[in-house]
Length: 367
Ligand SMILES: Cc1cc2nc3c(=O)[nH]c(=O)nc-3n(C[C@H](O)[C@H](O)[C@H](O)COP(=O)(O)OP(=O)(O)OC[C@H]3O[C@@H](n4cnc5c(N)ncnc54)[C@H](O)[C@@H]3O)c2cc1C
Image (cartoon, rainbow, N blue to C red):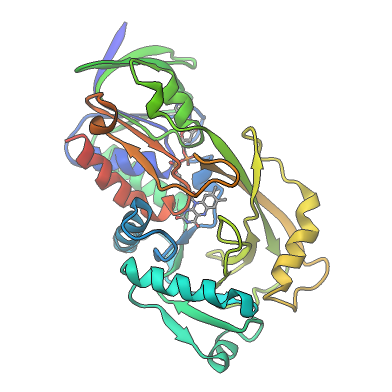
């Protein structure tokens, strides 16, 4: 038997839940299909939980626009829904003279992206703000913050459910068919069934390409390649030596081993960056000495033995080693020709910050 529903959202990470909420608030009938037995167990719960200001991304890119709009929407939403968060601020620092040009580029890029509150810090000011920090220059981003990502997902899910949405756990989308006017999805798991819908949003994160490739009738050329990069986090034993987040100038295509602070005030360092070929969250303890070296560049007071293994997260990449970092890819009917279908690919950082703005963007594509 085939069940009929207006909208299906595939994936209950923060992005899928924000989209489901948005569509349900419009009065649409929404079912969220999640492969795992709980929501938010992948990227959405294995990240830095930072509300990014929107500094790093190319002007006019989806990452820049959705991060700035998403950050503003997120602070409002957190306040309205009492989601734990703190506008804690961050300092971005050059550890030596070779990084000064990078620091300047960030400031210019931030200004181009509409991040208008960045403030250059003199050396004595930096020393007063963060006495444990060693660097040659830096600036402050006061609108960077931290958030309880689980609380955000719960709030989105609650809003969606209050507006009639249903969440089906342990319900992986295994295959499907798309055509003019209707979309059919084959759902596996204990309650295997076929669902026909008018709108389907593929927010399957690390598996979004796999889901898209399983849809008969969708051109394969629309689907980007799949790559994964793992990042490790270490926590710091003892009190946090910093009052704000600390980000060194990035050296490659990620933001570097930075300091984030959780809502309980504990410091954690990470993530590092390593290409992997499958989804495997195992923690590789051999990373430790590289972490000590990276962190001591800006925090020389780090004691031997103070780092504790934390957790890992995997970035859903759509580019491979050495290739330029692409934008978020959000494909609607105009891109692939299938009415009602939206695919989201490569929703890595700043996807958490951008989630509410991504939801608005997706709602616009399916109007
Ligand atoms: C190490 C790391 C650090 C990050 N730090 C930050 C940060 O500080 N700030 C920030 O803004 N962003 C950050 N991000 C990015 C952010 O975490 C992600 O952009 C965001 O969580 C993506 O959410 P999502 O819902 O797209 O994906 P996910 O959370 O991965 O959710 C996808 C869901 O789809 C489900 N699924 C998969 N296949 C199927 C299927 N066939 N059928 C049904 N369901 C399926 C999965 O089980 C999963 O629950 C970070 C990411 C990583 C990896």
